[in-house]
Length: 398
Image 1: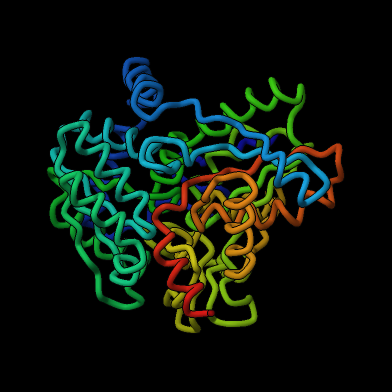
Image 2: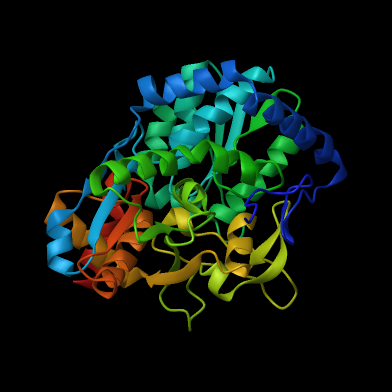
């Protein structure tokens, strides 16, 4: 049986590792040692489980979208309702874990990047709960697109740092946060927002998120008496996808689909389909697939969903594609908007634009599987944060 974990050096096959400047080697090694202790500490895990239940509201429901299923035809479409978590997305799952780890390490401050703002809100929430300072770096384009989440972070006591360099989006926010962490690491914990970055972050974030798949497995067995035929999740950095996928990776009869942002088309330069079109490279301390120019620099990327607007991907995803365990496809901005509207009108659920990428692929997949099929879609977040932007876009098209 395939071992789906990283090796001792943090590599999934040839992807991963911790490729760091000298001044960050010791701080990241400190995080790794602390996490190794915490993951094997029953008291730490018990407190984490308590907060997931009593504070986040887990388990999140697995909901059969009957009207969407009937409209599309074919397989039953179930939605894993991470949008119903406290703060409205899956991000709170790993942010609470990171916050508890920061406290365990004696840190007094948390720092992070955010794209769509959901990670920033979740980390600010965890910091407020645990009595820690919080600083969130965010590209200026995303600050404008996701203003409600900026306000939420500030209300929760976080300092929001607007980043105006380069593409002014998620990649630059990560760069900026890393620079600040390198200066202040003695009292600061870097709460990376996805299953990316230097080891141990891809493993740590995946582990904290894997509660999604454990719940979904139990719930689908209760509802259908069997495992699903397919899982579908959006992939930017890859945390919500790894959260759903991990529990099912050994089940070879379960097809797994990761959906990347095709933006305005894979034949344009306005997309963020890293696994589909990227090449091996180095980004933010990890060896992974990267959308890059001829000189090896990360290329400008685009997605209608700020949380997917990233030129790299988590190293485990790159490896899962290489070994053929996960199928990676893409959805355009327009397909995503269509799925967003359809789910809103048929089920009374307004999904995040990130999650709408996964819904878009499920709409295509259901007829192919037929009426005996079962699909689980990770509805990773709710769409409140996207409404103003979507209204502006629709008015512009009108």
